[in-house]
Amino acid sequence: MKQAARAYRDVIRAMVRGDRRSRIAQRAEETRKQIAMLTYKRMNIVRQQNETKDAMLNASLFKDLQLLNRQVETLKRDRAENDKSLLFVRDTALIRDSLLQERGDNERLVQHLHDIGSFLTNQREYDELIERYNGSSKLSQEETVRRTAGKVGLHVPF
Amino acid sequence: MLRLFTRYNTAARPGLSLRPLATQASPLGVDGSTENNLKTETNRLAKTGEKFWEKVSLKDDGSQFLVQLDSKTVLTPLGNALAVDKRRSLLAMLLKKEWTNLPSLAIKTHALPLTSLVSRCIDLENVNKPDSDPEMRAKIGGDREHIANDLLRYLDTDTLLVFCPQAEFEGALRKAQDERYLPIIASVEKFLGQYSTSPIKLRVLDADVDGLRGNSQTNETRKAAKKFLESLSLWDLAIFEKTVLTTKSFICGVLLLQNKALDKSAEGLTSTMESVAQAATLEIIHQTDRWGEVEDTHDVDKRDVRRNIHAAGIVAYK
Amino acid sequence: MFRTTLRAASPIASRAISRPLVAKSAFIGASKFVAPIRFYTAAPVDKKEITSRVIDVIKAFDKTAASSEVTGQTYFHKDLGLDSLDTVELLVAIEEEFDIEIPDKVADDLKSVGETVDYIASNPEAN
Image (tube, rainbow over all chains, first blue to last red; front, side, top):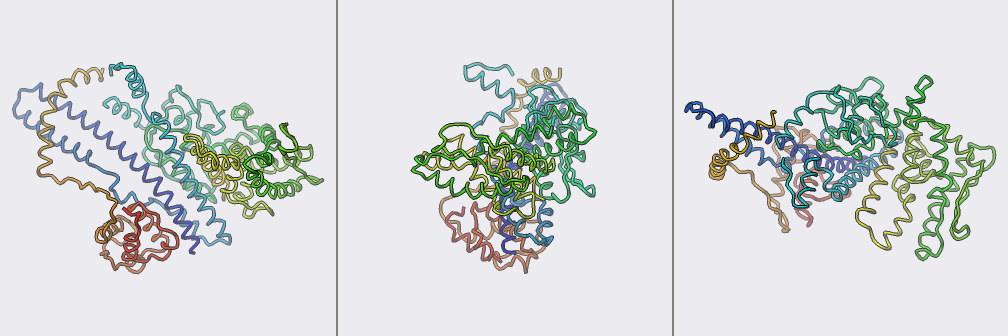
């Protein structure tokens, strides 16, 4: 059982590290999208404000604006790094099942779990290195164009 | 920012029927030959590089686990369901994880090594069914005979059959090669002997004796090795192919299948995946020990070899 | 067309927006709760803080009984109802929280919050 628990620890460790990294990235992406959406709403309200002469409407628009600002501030303060639930793997049922199904060749399974841990670790480190050495690969087409232009002192008009 | 938002909005609409943009096509399959325009998730992903789903799940259909995105089964480049036998539940879990963990809208194909290999396994099985389209088979390089002949070439110049001169690394590399490779070679000869009426002797290339020349195996050896390849299921053949391409070694392919696809390996062929990786990169290990790691080369390659070998092992395991 | 509208709107928008935004942030700074930012130091973390962070991690674990009150004396199996695999998951989470790796030999024997806190306090790498 001790060997099985150690193999399980190996897999869980590798999973938590990989999952946490991508869950933080996903959350950041999600937040970014929401902020973009709220910013868009905010712009619409401001435009309405500029167009209207109605004081009542203007006051209510101002309230909406404040609410939106607050939401944006909350989103900006969101720190996925501090979320303790990201320290846990979400579904472990299938690994547990395979460990609990007492099979004759437990040793083979234990080795396999270590291998899975090693696979996940190598894949994660590989991804990290690729990202580090090809930093710009994550950029969008537009961003790449903008930066390329920037290098020679040009500004792209969008 | 706004444009990104609006663009995402159109992308987020459940549009599995949307025709993928045909620009910057980079097929997802490992073989690199699966260029086609079938509307499958793997193709769409490869072509648009955008994530377009919310939830990844596994569906248990009684005998298989199907990988699903928003309750639609993921299809391989040739349009087959991405599904694995229930005995491969750990693989199913890891496939799901691969799709769940894709970090953002920008998806790189190296992020899905298991999906690529499993897709290859499934597509190979399908194009080799008796009633399948020969054109499709040719398209993905799925002809058994061709694959086998290509793989046999690796036995001539197998990483584990090439020995460096004594003088290099003060004999340290040669010593390590002798210690590691010779027992494996002997066991593989015995193993291949099962597929032949006469004993098999592998020809090695010893730099001290042979200098620089090509190497080729005898006809007996080739025949036995071919028979061995013919004995493999298509699923295992795809795994074998992946391993051989990663390690540049036919023998490493044998070691991997022996230790991962079977409950018990043949005598003398028991090996961990880490020692397979080390055997395949022995010379590099000595080089980096001596001269240090070159950034963006050795560090990346080291992980790349291991993630690929392990991916093959995980797909093989049941 | 959608985009042209936006572009036309944006210069006005940015000017008009800047004012409420400034007022807004001052307001937040004064009265709103600001999420604490943890500053990591090289100095060893003290036991009280370790205990409270360990308890926070335990509380985020959905396999622990929600009602159970967690203290330094809490045992993973006896008090929280965790089996050996759950305990592995919990200890890995704690490792991540403190950015350490607990050696197998030690981890095999950690059975309570107190033992875990003692180990972390003794580990100079913990932060």
